[in-house]
Image 1: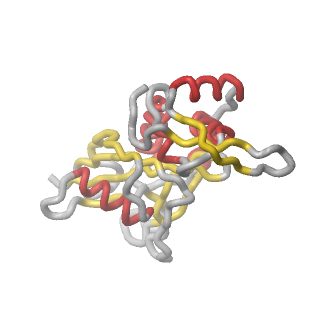
Image 2 (image 1 turned 30 degrees about the vertical axis):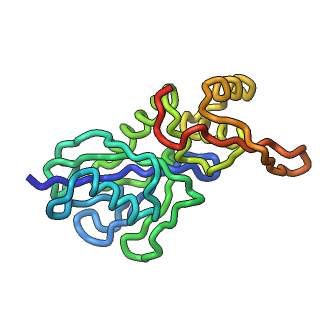
Length: 208
């Protein structure tokens, strides 16, 4: 039975949650956008295939990556089973392929173009999983640089949730959970006084 993997690769750009899509250069669905993915190579495991595609499309490997769900045949794809993964990538680190064919591009999740292979179902499922993980894990570490302001961290949460958060409550919660700690560095932000930079206590998945 042909098995494929697809990746929902999320990032935050301009305070909006984005997903990486590929413009298909061949049939079926030529010219439409779809999630990156493909059939497994001979002898390749599912996890290895997902890691390979993530590195091929973004140039990074040491980020949050998790198996999401197995879908029975999506659209007109060749695979009878499609195993989906989702990954979180800091857009400042990602380096998309420069090719004009099978062109990759970031797209805001809330204004997606028509997608091939029912990929909208996969993205919706991944977005729901990501929102849920904000409640009990530290996964946003994978969307932020090594050091960041609490304002930027809050903006990342707001981009995922699609709503504004109370600044004071947010800071009290994330600092109280012990997932971030202050550094001895500051960032100048316009005419305001410099903002303290923070870092995650652990840059790996952690259940709170």
